[in-house]
Image 1 (cartoon, one colour):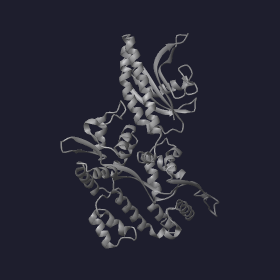
Image 2 (cartoon, rainbow, N blue to C red):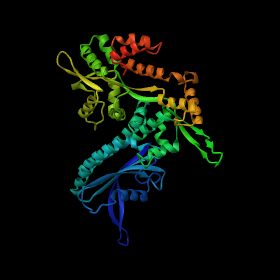
Image 3 (tube, one colour):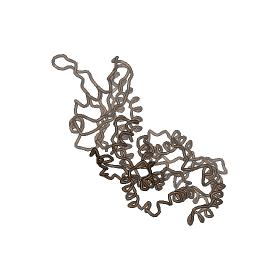
Image 4 (cartoon, one colour):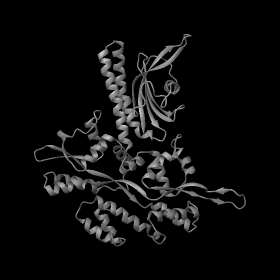
Length: 468
């Protein structure tokens, strides 16, 4: 949880001996708790940490007067918090420092875009504030300070919104992170120890906390942590394979489905937009395969779900459609509506349709849902290890524990583990059924629900474009 954002100006002062001593003058300080104010915030941030942060920003600066800005992220030395700070130096040498203070267990990477956007807007504010101060325009200084205060308040508000993620956004949190995607891809193949997972992740990033990274997996009940005793070598006495292991309970995907809410509403109300909108939906899903969707496209969808303005608009459009010239004013004052709509249309999340009078309407083309399925490749490794197959990537003991974890979840029993391929096909078709709006849906569902398709039935699936 964010504790506050402090905006300060750096000044060159002198002590009694005439030695130059840097100091900071508070401009705007916004705190979450009322007990903190401009004269009392040492429990959050002390002067030594402020000076250390500035030092990180200014290392390597060879000149004192030129335009310069950068970000810093790190843990404080004197208080139990972490910060993301933005430093701005103007051409005349005036320096500003804006520090966002977070709890140690906050995932600040999630708020990176919001803080970057704040930094861009602060550039304009600091430039105007400096010019107003140099010209001693008191009324303008007051107005700019009000704008700065509102900017910091708004950023805290946006961060708070993004801190309260629903389940779909938590799935997006996984697909929006290279480190978490690596965790998911690795676990799809086999159970793995946390220590080994750390070594794999360090090839992507040096500074990491695996406990933070796996938090959304645990909250979504996707993985489970279990202690494995390990095996002792009879000759050397060395114990191997011991420690905390990560086990995959179920796999998770971000998939698109038609917006049935609007389709059904248009059909029921005989809306003139129905034939056009339905055809656009059919055209998109005729070529859509959730299992072959490029990962870069999935990342972009995840990014949309993690943008407060985009997500609010996406949720609104699940049940509504609007004329292009009357888009509801639900966006923040800093959001550029045209850019946001362009991004959503480019990703085929929304689409434009025209009525008989030529008026343009915005409609949600594809809904985005999370889909849980059994971890198929993972189960194949369990099968190999239980059969003591030399090609197995895990030991027999770990395979037994993995099977126990799956049975607790109710994914598979031992007797049904042979039916992995059949179950995989049925799960794949289930997703396609959600995406299917053609009349053939009922015919396909009829034989898929009671048996594994024959060769001729699979040929029919290929004809319908539902199975590749």
